[in-house]
Each structure stands twice: as structure tokens, then as C-alpha cells.
Length: 93
Image (cartoon, rainbow, N blue to C red; front, side):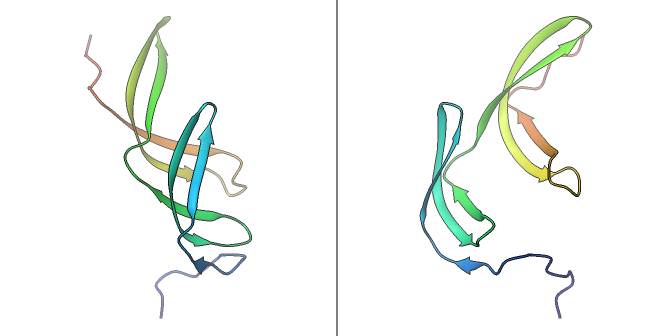
């Protein structure tokens, strides 16, 4: 018996298909692991690199890092939580 209930609305089909997701002018390529009528889960080769602009005390700085987690932040799925690991830790003041 599974430890958690399966709340999926549509059945998943395990299938490997070429996938490309675009973020503005950037593309991330990979292969699907499973597909349904509602969406797709896929695995991409290599890290998803991002730049994060942080404003603190009126001063802005930009840090590069890797996206390590992406999840729905609320039940509606409209808000998204992102976790980024910086390439170099910000220097303490």
C-alpha cells in the first residue's frame, strides 16, 4: 500500500520523448519521463543556471546560481516557490 495518496487528475504514461522548455530566449532540453493530458515530467541534462537580483538597503547586487527546487507555493498552483544555490556565497558586511 502506498504511503501517500495519488492525487493526480490524469493517468501518467511512462514515455521518453524529446522535450524543450523555453525561458524567454533561453531553452532547456531533455527527455520526458512521464506524460499525461495535464502535463509532463522531464529530466534535463546539466544544471539550470539563473541570475538573482537582490536589493538590500537600497543597494542591488546580482548573483549567479543553480535552480535546485521548484514547487507550488499554494494549493491553486498560481504561486511558485524557487530555491537557488548561489555559485559563490554572498560576502558578509
